[in-house]
Length: 379
Length: 185
Image (cartoon, rainbow over all chains, first blue to last red; front, top):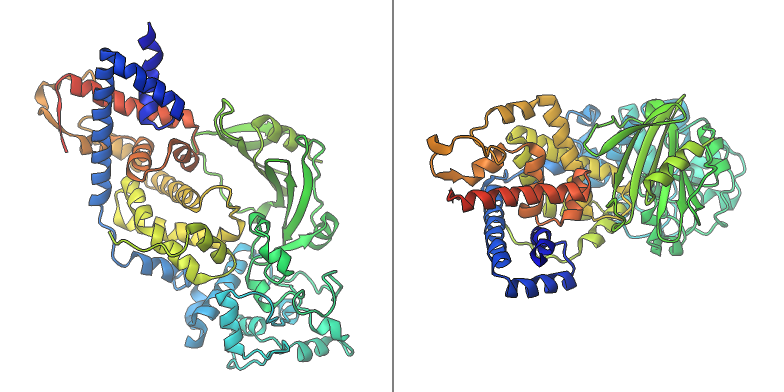
């Protein structure tokens, strides 16, 4: 019977999952078939009632008038979660400083293993301001707070800090390239004084080295703002314009470079996949202390392999419907696949597990089969 | 609800916020906080819990903004975080069993003797009595106008499951209407 063919499509119509062609076909049948038309009307009434009922329920919910304020105060770090902010003089609560502090605090909470307030950290933080680097409002605030001179030199006019944490913040914001650099080296070459040292949180004392970012050109040297902004901010203008920068995962202090550099700086031995989906190539490596991320690109998709020290991986596993547990080389792993199984939607999968001292996550536009193969092939 | 003129698209705000523009992030908060609150409330039904969840969700967004790869929409990403936090709360508070226990009627209760129940059944009560995940499917689809694909992404379940949940809600309601139940709204 022809009507059998159309019965399932009635609900699909109300799920808005029919193609325009399928809708036209259904309309054609409904025009001709009274039974199906009656069914359709009843289902439509049910759909309308559900919509009205749910929308009314939603609108009846009273949202507190100060909700946005409460959210912003959390973002400003005024909650008990960040107690040390309470001890600071009020200067440090201006938006720019608060933002800088927030990143510091989050850095400490995210990477608590590192002694942020220790000697090594304090020595490392040397900033230069590069006026050419972008127009983010936080940068502007930093510049105005510190009276940047056009040639990139900074004068600090911040008051004496009383606590270690405040002193770190001062160091972060007070860019005195000439003075600070000369503290540690007798003869800083002119090109290097224009460089900043990205070193927060610090891991030992990395010697100043050529990052290959060009000469003393201020537009290529990482700026004060890059410590607080995503990668690419202090990079070349081409980098900044390239939207791909934002599509690459990275936090405020992400380093970018080769896998060898990542291994050297994090002390992690990176696992390389021996299986890759067709056409996949390693396109970028970024790292933070305790974590390396490898980004692979195929023609129409990409995925990332993130490897971290197990204590830092942090995210507790929420057992959600749709997640399954599988075994990867003897380790228990959580797999989640979205995208329709029938292939009508591009695949997306995430797989996380822990083995030995490392935790691993693979996530991106790969199929269930591929993600398992990649994971199993990691050395 | 206030109507705000959209001077910048959400994508632009996200790009600016990722670059460190806190004002842009504040605008993202303004645009999404109300509906995020309402969605969480549909699940948790407790103002204190919902406020905590919404604050924590935006803080998580802020912290992880740099890792947001813009391959899904910001709204979908935010709601996914909100939903996960709601589920965490539910587990902690063990509300799920309490909600199921206080049922007077629900969609699956077709065999119950309806004689003692008034003809006019409050559809909203029925929706309230559903499991949190069922309620969420209806809230996200009918209340927040997400398509079935986005609902599936937000809830971390297959699209087929979303569709079948919507279908069964519609079909059961259709049957009740056919049997002469009147629904008060």
